[in-house]
Amino acid sequence: MPYKYRKSYYFSDDNIRDYIFKGYVIPYRVEINKNRLTILGIIKYKDN
Image 1 (cartoon, rainbow, N blue to C red):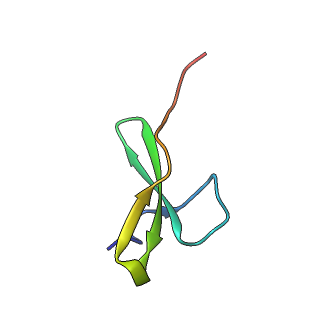
Image 2: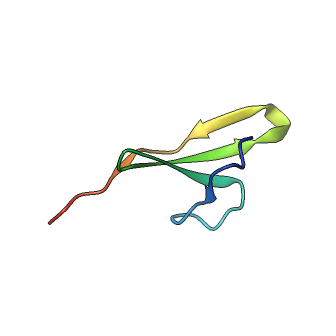
């Protein structure tokens, strides 16, 4: 189920997905051949 979440808004690679949770966006890379998920960062939406 690593492809459950949307394709990343920030990256053009199909293996990078965005997990959204309570105002945070957590992009992660899916590496099926290594059976691994790699978190690329944590982004918090901010009001101006």
